[in-house]
Length: 117
Image (cartoon, rainbow, N blue to C red):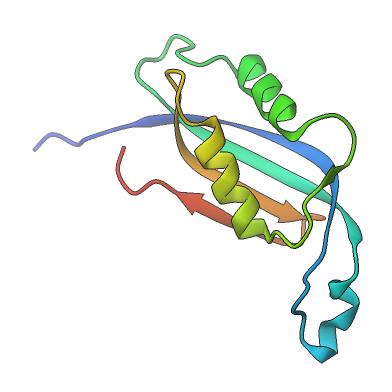
């Protein structure tokens, strides 16, 4: 039996931004107002060989360029929504994003994964 193996590389960045939860329940109503987080953003990309198919620094630069300079405004977007948008926007150009994760202040977050390599 031959195992099917796949390899991904990943990068993480700490990126400042603001969001809010417009429909926050009463016990969390403080989250309905705009508030700041340091978002930890991780991107996992499929590579087809072991010789820098996608280079870490280039991937980090693409991630930071996507985020933009300074603190990004996310409005009512959740971590789940930001991760899905990141995955959609950065897939292509020869890159196959397999997972995108977004967490807030290192305490909790969301991951969106592509099902098959």
